[in-house]
Amino acid sequence: MPESRPRNIPEATVARLAVYLRVLAGLADDGRSHVSSGELATAAGVNPAGLRKDLSHLGPCGVRGVGYSVPGLRDRLNETLGGARSRPCVLVGAGRLGSALADYTGFPSRGFEFVALLDTDPATVGSQVGGLTVLPVSELEAVVARTRASIGVVTTPAEVAQSVCDRLVAAGVRSILNFAPVALAVPAGVDVRKVDLSVELQVLAFLDQQRDGSPQPAAPELARAGAR
Image: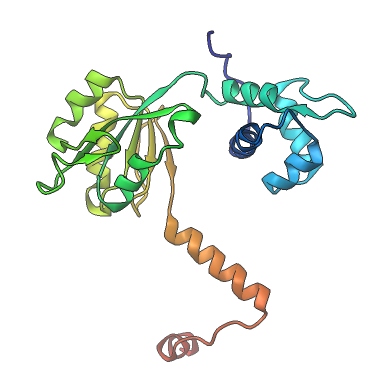
């Protein structure tokens, strides 16, 4: 079946639609056939009105008094988000984080398949991760051409992430997921999503502090710097 024509959906809404899809996948695994908007909203961490507004981008979905068909809404979301066909991904940087991502079994069911892993470390090249043999990064361009990879995942150290990104883009990759702690510069027409785990942990630390209502005292050197 051909994919739907892309809709003009705000990026923040797309992110929430992906969360709804994850929740629906879990409900389907549990054998659920229908779910109410309230239950789906609670599981996704949003309010029911916001959920209904997000789903309005898909057209009519639910039935009053019945709720949403779990398999039906899951398929609609999957099609809208581009998961109706498998998208080949190449990962550069097969260290601990990269290996953990490549070994995760949940991606194929969401339409993402790692087709190649690449690294510069001679001790890592040739090893097996997630059923794939880690290749030398010198083969990046040839691998992208051979696999027709559409998504590149960068899990390298910060100092080499931009050069890896440049090579992926030059090879024809137009979507990049960046785990390196650095902002990547890309030309128009290339999309980059950045995942910074340290930033997310810092946000959680702040929220935890706010919840406790007892901010930790600043370190002496920071207190002195603030006083100057």
